[in-house]
Amino acid sequence: MSHREREFERIGGETVYDGSFVSVEVGRFRYPDGDEVERVIVRHPGAVGIVCHDDEHLILTRQPREAIGAPDSLELPAGKLEEGEDVMTTAKRELAEEVGLAADEWKVMPSYYSSVGMTDEIVYLVYATALREDPDAEPDPGERIEVVRWPLADLDGALAATKDAKTIIGLMLLREMRRGAE
Amino acid sequence: MSHREREFERIGGETVYDGSFVSVEVGRFRYPDGDEVERVIVRHPGAVGIVCHDDEHLILTRQPREAIGAPDSLELPAGKLEEGEDVMTTAKRELAEEVGLAADEWKVMPSYYSSVGMTDEIVYLVYATALREDPDAEPDPGERIEVVRWPLADLDGALAATKDAKTIIGLMLLREMRRGAE
Image (tube, rainbow over all chains, first blue to last red; front, side, top):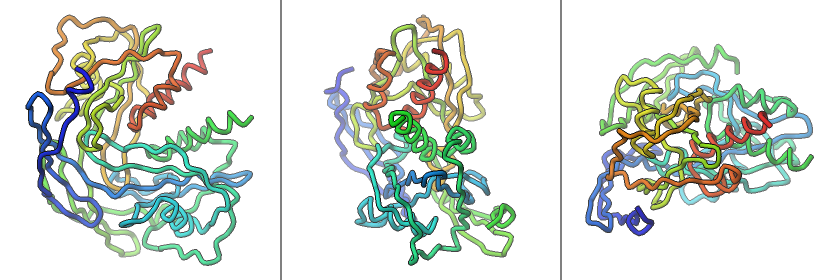
């Protein structure tokens, strides 16, 4: 099975559900050998997760996640990309809205796909330091977010306390970066 | 915002799309303060990803992923849970079907949620060693899977070559395990 044999082309599809931020498409694809397949694809606008800390603490959130039945999911500050928005704009907005902070230093971290068999959701991870209070931040009370300051020295403990993919990947990347800097 | 204020209860919902393996539900939830929210939730049966290697090579797959437009996604062997199936049954079946192997040693690794704002998909990671050819394995040609033997000494290279969440998390966990064993 070579690369050439896997080069599909999209030959059609229809939207079977169009919701507030996700839609579901049944797409049709053709392979070079003539095979045609149908795939259910959840279309998602993409998201940004922000790995951020000061000298002593990781800045995390605790919030309810109805989809997984969890009232207290421990996560990176994060949010969905709005229509046409670039990653840094989303990152700055979510850092202000979710945890009331701004950052003076930003770095791009690797991005990843959440679940390649089902959705096109991509998650862009960014690294924010040189944090300061954002006087203009207006938290959205509807999100029910608690800001959690987690000791930076206990990254392993934070990893053990979450089951959220973006948070696991972001914190494991941070752990590698910090080891490299030692 | 305390734990108590985040303890939602499900008060209703309707299935707005019911597909081959995913369905989409618009659920309604109520919070202790009386607030009611609607959430679009993609229901998924869950999946298993298998971190496996022999003395010299990681066993990975390369396959087309229509959802992300990628003909050559580099991934752990993996598959969805069938109705009522336990994790180890899925793991053994997928290891045979995707890469033609059986394993004599299995360990449970951490599980995670793919995208907590959108879906209940959980991914169970398992670690398989003491690999041997499975004489009964019948690969599914429709999956267009190429087996990739990636040098175990180059875990970092494999991590740099994939953008798939389960593969990133599985290989980062493996890297930690191997460091601990050194």
